[in-house]
Length: 114
Image (cartoon, rainbow, N blue to C red):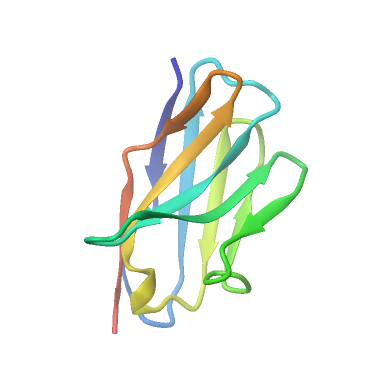
């Protein structure tokens, strides 16, 4: 069974930065896809960024140039978020996709004050 634990959310002023981290435990394949989605109040869960280890990264247009996803190993993913604005306020969910399907974290709140 795979579990994901996120950390790093919080309250930040507009223009500030935060780094989110996600750590996976359980039966983790070396080749997998990890990344982030976010969900604002009353909205659908939207894609933010994804990455394979030592491979390609992809970003939503709304965060390109401001967010950077990185992976140190097969079990972790981080999201460096710069130039945050009020539209980035949401619950951020980490995900891991591998042979067994997709696993989601519990979410971490990011609130950007203007």
